[in-house]
Image (cartoon, rainbow, N blue to C red; front, side):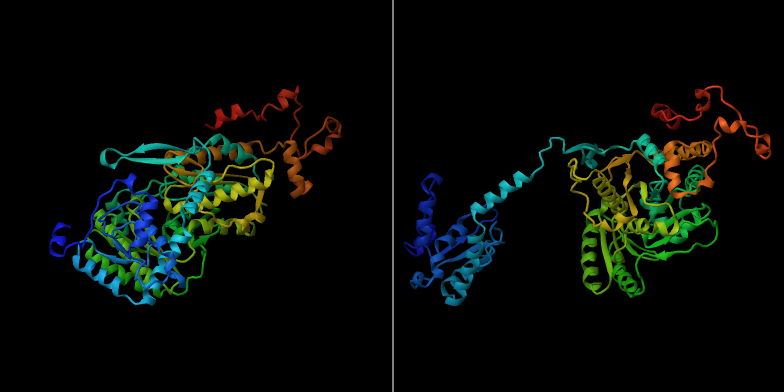
Length: 568
């Protein structure tokens, strides 16, 4: 300031004031007297000076306020906090003195029409977003916050620099196998949806080298063991069950490993291809597509673009399946690979805008990939498709039990949709008797009303993820072995029902009388019928008369504590 005044006397008048000496009234008087305000901060927080200056010169927009002065313009640093909202101001780089000088000259020589337009644009935001409106928005947000001291719980994971804090809902508890078995036993129509890798089979993708070897077909993937195959066969043999394995693998991989399990439904490539349960084992299966997939010209375009990024990103490679094309960068430098993936995502979005495809980006934590697939294909969509078409392939009535288990981000749409279907059924069952707690904000809301006609109001839906980690599932199991134990416990329930199939409770008789003819029920002899002539029993084994009621009912037990000991 001294150097300027020495060269041009009385050009700059500088006075530094304390905040107590420059209140709003004093500031508004100075701002009203000024023609231009300039803010050249390098970095600041909430700077209200340009907004107050705009308010002070609102009268310049009116006819009676035009006094011939070229006033009302702001010159703001592009690093200032209010630059984004003050669109009518002149923006400068404070490090470039020539830009500041040019902005001063432009502000003082600007045409009247352009100056009025800039002042009008700046005043539009200042008059609309007032302090009163901001305070009201804050109060409404505070009022809308759910008052729950246990809204979430946190757990640490990792070591050293890889340590991170995971936040989960307070109700995120281990899956209660006893509750699942009890609901499974009482249901007449059941649906079990299982992910493949990482859920019923150990995940081969945990190691980047293994993943690369699988893609290049230099290493064979893991296959299900006899323990799992046996459990699946037992579950599929129950006429009340509909069991599906929903995987991201290709059709030939699922067919090769699971084709010898009768009555097992398969969904490959995240549900793009669906094979309904069939009693035939081995050989080829009949598949249907979830969405029309006729135009495949986008594949060659996507691959050509991905090859460019593969050539300049060391450690990346392209993976192709029947449905999708992926660019994997999990083995590349994390920072550079992520930057390249963002650029690739934008490139693909612009080029493939006219095609019916979805472009998905999974971060390093999710495996590090950019994927192009047909639009509208995910495990949530295929789960709704299965429920709506289940009665066509299995006449079991409305769904009363659902068990859904997955392990990674690809399974989240399926877990989310099934949890919302279960919540909707429970809401219809209780009506307005008691308010339900809201679903977690992490659940993407989907319209599942189309499944209402295929789901019973008595539906009990269990959703679980493998491993304790943030998920839209209601519960979790620790590992793949826990999934196997849960499936085996359901097999025990089926086995017990088969052994005791000659006995029927009153509830069984009531439910069966509505759907099955009387001739299918096994007769139970009364005391009067024991005295019928002997020729009525020529073709039947001799009846055994129980000495007491305990002896007759000795094999029928419904004690929940005993059941827990038997199952688990």
